[in-house]
Amino acid sequence: MYALAVSDHIMIAHSFKGEVFGPAQQLHGATYGVEVEFRRAQLDACGLVCDIGLALKALREVLSELNFKNLDEVPDLRGKNTTTEFMAGEIFRRIRCRIVAGALGTVTAEALDSMRIVLRESPVAWASFEGSLR
Image (cartoon, rainbow, N blue to C red):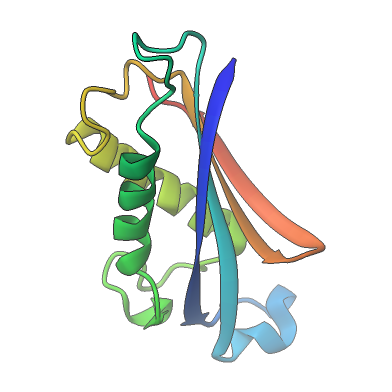
């Protein structure tokens, strides 16, 4: 399986509901390192998984919708516990929508086998979401 990955970061604020979260029930901030890895079994005719510039642009567009936002106030996320795990899945869904809409040029979701999103909370803790694009 071939893979191409790009990364960026976002700074967000949010709070959680539920005693399990202790002091994180209060509004707090986080800076996430965000990585997206595109995978496919065969390279395209140019020898690529996908265009690295278009991949980075798609990631940055998705992250711009979340960067410097209080996630508690983002309409699509209101009322949800925006845990690192949840946000990895949310970013996956948003990038997948962009791929389907043509954000990676001639590389369609069907041309890619899977995608993996990793959110790094710190050097010692991270969460991910991986799924098929077919």
